[in-house]
Length: 211
Image 1 (spheres, helix red, strand yellow):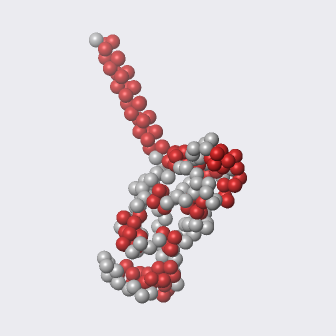
Image 2: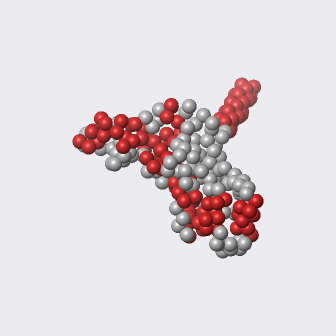
Image 3: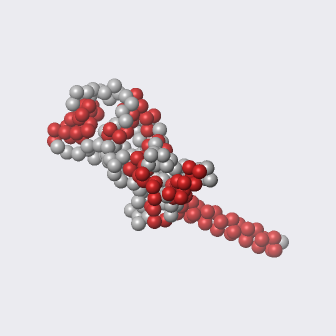
């Protein structure tokens, strides 16, 4: 009887320790990941209305995305390019647009809350991905044209990025950036290599993304 009791005790202890270790691992592996993060913004800005209904190109507001590391958040003047004449919205009337007008008159920036945050030791260049890699904004940010309020839809973890680099094909056509990879280019043109992936050109090397 005591033998059975001791086995039950050890089994319960093992399961309890395993449960604690599993939950500790889940908590630790999720540190810094903000999938689903959707903070309240100073203005109820609808991407569904602007990018979806009115088809405003992402680059018009985020004008650094094709030439800079950062996509850039639009300043008040960019908003005023349209809202100097448009003073009333379909959903909120004048209430939200008046906040833009007030900020413009006072010469103050809008305090937008950043959503997509990466660790300080991670290097990410928007221009490299959008201009050179021809990656659609939706690949990382989700279908923003359907979102009333923007949220982070992917983990943006290292594993998530590496998985993308292993699957994303490289388009050599008319792209001088890839001239350094002449052998891969020649193999691709000759048919020796059917596809070239980002991982083939160093896309999973540590120093590519980490300082």
